Amino acid sequence: MQPAKPPTEPTPSRFSLPGSVARPSPALQSKGVKITISKENYLKTIAEAESEGEAVIAATLARWLNVTAPAVTMAIKRLKRDGFIHVDSDGHITLTAPGREIANRLLNRHHLIERMLTEIFGMEWFKVHEEAEQLEHAVSEDFERKLIEKLGAGASCPHGNLVGLDTPVDRRRRGLRPLDEGAAGEKLSVVSVFERDREMLEYLENLGVRPGVTLDVIARNYDETLTLRVDGKSVQLGRPVASRVWAAAADSRTAQ
Ligand SMILES: [Zn+2]
Image (tube, rainbow, N blue to C red; front, side, top):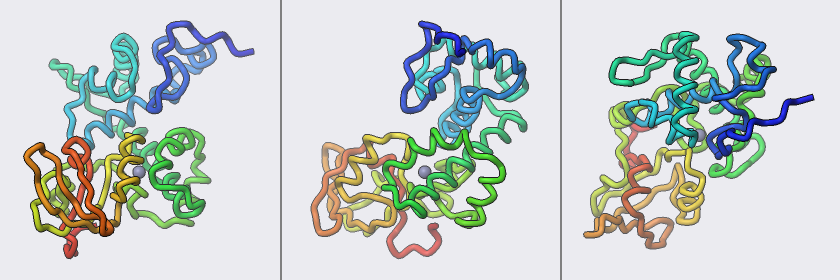
């Protein structure tokens, strides 16, 4: 018989799975240092926020995971105690080697499941992230090996993102730029899109802006929007969205 959920449990969002971090069930507590799903999610989120070039502090995690500050404080205490994170005197959080190993394992599985869903099952690219958020916790090492055999390693996910730590600096080094830096007259190829915002992905899909698409930058407007030509249509894109889409010169061979 499962104990009743504590009433203070944070509302699950698309970023967090049901299950309280601050007050784990007795069943979870009795397993000692076993990593719970929520702990794994914290570690993965730290790696993901780093990947977006964010300085990771407690508030970053509260925002990314949509949990309360006290829940984050409690989780940080536990992760630190268990040796998965390091917190410096400014509150800046970094992963230790064991913490990074767990985060990477989850990121790898997330990546493989997204690829499985689109490449094998034909699921739409803008839907697979949420699905992978759930399924990544249920993948065994055996199944992971099968997925790698089937899909091959190293390709980018349906959102164009590479597996592992890939910061804005890394992307620029590969010749990519955020779309909002596009100049009028440029022909650009969309390479990757920030994938943790489902509404934004659907918005982009409706405009025809998705990884692999080539578009023309027609104008940079005074109101910080871009006028683009996508598939023969004129499309306006505001800066908050354009800055989360990475593109390469359409004839570039250095970009992945
Ligand atoms: Zn992805």
